[in-house]
Image (cartoon, rainbow, N blue to C red):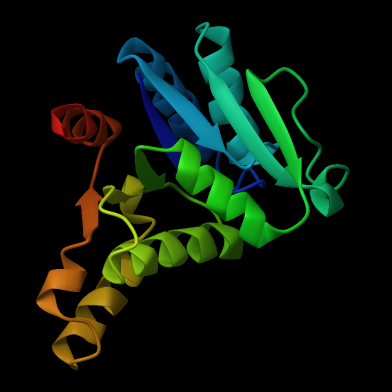
Length: 180
């Protein structure tokens, strides 16, 4: 079973489309024999993707710093839930447990996790695939910024290529499934 780290918001966003997309992602992960690794919250987009995987009898691994257990409302029904001391430790464990990474809609925490894991790939700490699921154009501006950084000489073509843009859940699942 491949384990997929999903970086996403502990908020639901202003439109129900984000929660619906997260639920669909969860369902398709299970249907394709993939497990979920995520931040451990029971609320927002995070909670929606986890609940969806669990409803389909899939496996979910959550990691949360103890300072956020009450704030982010820790999920209590996961396959495995680990409480850690810091965000750095959270990201390291999520990395260790995962075979691939994908960002779906979220805020600063999502961007932090995405950029750090891409930086680790850039520094050759890992070769695991890093995806941005550009659902409904949510990441258009971020992807444009990456292209600007490339055009201005701050990001090489090779490093820009570390970010795999996908525009649908199906495209993401198919690409992950094709990876060795």
